[in-house]
Length: 221
Image 1: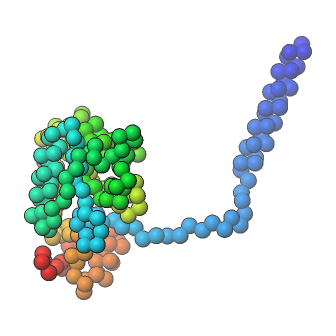
Image 2: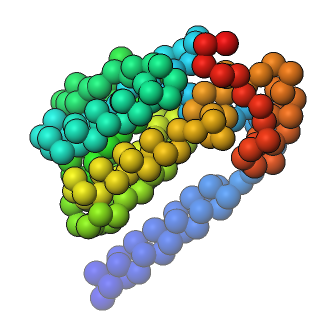
Image 3: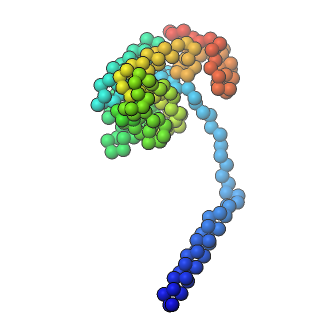
């Protein structure tokens, strides 16, 4: 009888304590002085800006098939804008303990190739639910090419070429080379836009549209 009474009192005490904590956590703080401020968002991913860090192409050290595709991407970029981007393996740009981008690369746009099992940078993206590729998916000769918006640092975007094997990644590299056209320059090299077209470009960008009618500078201007 005594033990039953003790249990009832103990349960009542904890219920009262829980109710007090719940009500306290629901209280709103007035006049906190906090005000969220908007900031400009950069949707473009310049590969070789004149005043910033050039993109680095990252392949999987233990996946030789990703390096051959990285070399194809490097050549495509060089043929397009005469900028030879650095190649680096995933071990060089990530920390050994965390597999996250090393401090030296945190503010560098990266072009990453492979999948979350064969590239540590892509594994880090996967832990943030920003990609899902592995050695089974998308599989075959299928691939994904996407921009990953600010995965680790503000204003630093990544480009991911995802595939499960060499056939898929070679196809992704070929498609990426195809995308490097004058019509897509607003995404990869906005600094090439003619000065008299900047207002028109900004209007297109504000509405999320591809400005196919924008006139661009030619290389060497």
